[in-house]
Amino acid sequence: MSRARAVWALPLLLLLPVSSCQSCYSKRDVGPGDLALTRVDLVQGVLGQDVIVAERLAIVRIEVTSTFAADVSVPIERDSALCGGIPGVCPPAPVFPAGSAGPPAFMIHPGSHAYYLGQGGAAPGNAPPLQNPSVCTSVVLDYGNTLPETDENNNEGGSCHPLVATRQLRVFFIPIALGASPAPTCAAVQTIAARTTDFVRGTYPVADSGERALAEFVSCNAQSYPDDFAARRGLENGWRDDNGQPAPPTNIPHHDAFVGVFGVNAFAGGFGIGSQGQPQFGLIFHASLIEESQIDGAGAAQEMAHNFGWVTSDSPFNDGTNHLIPTPAPGYWVAKNCEMGFYRWSVLPSGNPCDPAHVPSEFMSPQGTSRPNDVMKWISKPTWDFLLGSLS
Image (cartoon, rainbow, N blue to C red; front, side, top):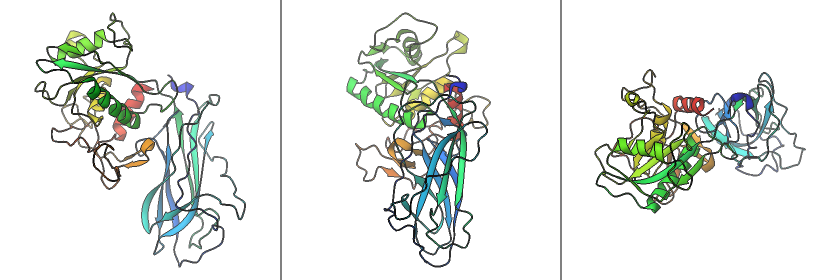
């Protein structure tokens, strides 16, 4: 899918209120202080995105500095629009009549903090393509001037980004018997496939809905291979049918990625294998292997990214082993309304599954053999940008 065919499909974002705003339009005196809106961003996974992916969930992230001595509750209005041509000022936000509920109110804390304004589902239908389209969002902090501030001119801001479409990502999961170890059960592979597609959908720049969304296929027809090279070659050349039936090799694989799931301790290679192929044999693999203990999805996401060619040997982020140097990966899992952070799968004892107190590490950094399966990794901007170029 070329960038020229990018379409407007960003979902409308629903504000998540702290409280209703029935009395937001009367001035309140809470002592001297000021609110300053210092940054506005649209986020689909990573912080600092340059472009917005069509038909993918997004959330508005703002940074606010408050010099008030205590928490203050203020209404915040947000408006998103598609602005053609050179990114500029979007249409003004809706006007709420006096006495109406108005926009939702948010609790703003003293000091500088980030806040997320809502999360919603994908909007149906597409608008006609525009030349040089961009997605713009505007934010008004303390809508209606409910608080007396020392500076009333620093409460508005916005952000504009080009809108691009990415192609569909089709992933096939297959149980394999590697060497002398038996293949995992079909149920185990189905669990890994579900977790992996959940994680990949949250981290990779792919659509959440529509014809360009990620597609998952699982075969319960286990295959046997003597070693990892034979497994990758066999998966690449023999699995092209959605029902798991072998088909003759073709120049263009039926799927974009093949993930073979092998039994625990099947061989000494560790958690997974994924590579750009064996150039001396003229092979470029789209197939990778992961151990069945990799239930969190990060391992498969890494091996699939290796198949796309990341990390490149000339990348300044390469740690010398074609992985990334340890890289913080702050971001947001929009579908789960979770700042990344730390995430525990709901099947594990956890309490609140989302804990933003931790900054996750990039999933392209070495995974490590002692990593608990419920310690979530995430995606950094270098990896996001590379995959965006590969999938656009």
